[in-house]
Image 1: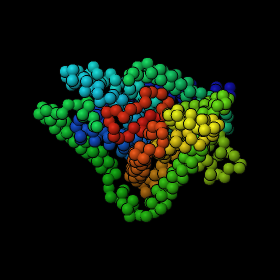
Image 2 (image 1 turned 90 degrees about the vertical axis):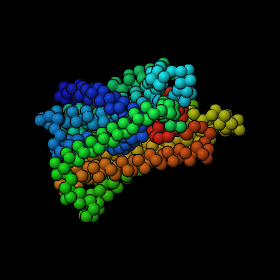
Image 3 (image 1 turned 180 degrees about the horizontal axis):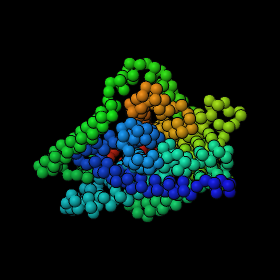
Image 4 (image 1 turned 45 degrees about the vertical axis):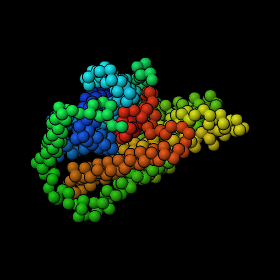
Length: 221
Length: 310
């Protein structure tokens, strides 16, 4: 165990996991918000665009997106982000993680809008608030609070899914490093638990935080 | 009820004009994206006929590559779902046991497997165990790794489904069982569990989508599933990009059909009333939140939440 710790850069691999998580969380939130706006817009064509995005991306395996980004987009279509192979894979991993989880962020935000009973909007309009006011003062705050829990779940799933980047990143990232260690040193249950523990440490506090937030901020009905 | 009726007023002349402008803008953007993609693919010679012709002209593309890959994918998914169902019912009942020790152990197992990435388990089971075990035939080792990892993760999700399904039944169900003299175990098995399982049917079908997508992880541990056949096909015919696109379409079609099936089952259950409890459409989320009432949008998938796994 001690040898494994000194010989392999486990901390470094988890640092990559954290970087991937942070960068793609931001990316997914941006794309997902745009898609959510499209999906609840009153314009049929925009709704169709948002729905298509979600249905296509959500039903494609993330592994396929990852492999395609390097083998297809970079090598054949020439969409190189960087001359250097590892940097190129790294940024493609970030992009694909963002694109994939944006579909789930979109659905999370939409399910937040879903929690608002129709009476809220009707009440807002009937006391004479304009469209913008009712959106700002009544609807969006409730929608935001309602989507905290599903957004938290999406973030946790994203952190776990960064392991899929191992397909293109290799040993730079936690799952890839575990594969290398297990291949070289043989099965070691402590090593597996160490990696599992790493993910528990990353996700458990977030789970508690989001559960807490969503309960504290939930709209009492 | 649709979104517009709640979020938006009936449009007046100005709003209608704005909507028309946005419609045109949306179409222009969509066409623009499409044009960029086509141009990019065209300039890389990916739209040439010889790239795509094998898919219709050469039956070997299907019989030697895609169909065997699809078969392996479906086989792994089916095995995992059945085993995960067994695992889920056992540990779900364990979490509902009246023995504290059983509850505690089942809870720890379920929470552990739910929070460890599937890929870590797959890698560990395959490289660390199955690929070097004497008793494991070499060609079965990758399948065993994929199935075991998927069973443990999805079994834990199903265990949570079982638990929440039983919890959301009206209390009268259990009380009725106890009052006619059934033991708590009998009440769980013969009254609560059947209704909970029926109520979670749509969520189970939705979970199938997750399992099917996750079998693609098997490519990392050398399992010859659909994604792997896309790669071998791509190098055999020198048409990597078309091969991946075709495989992606196959995944999307199957998964979309499953999502529709889940919604159909949900509606069927609701009209017939096979269970006393509410019908579950989503796998339980890692973050517990307010239950989703059928709010502004009645329609479309509410299959979000915990099923974000790749």
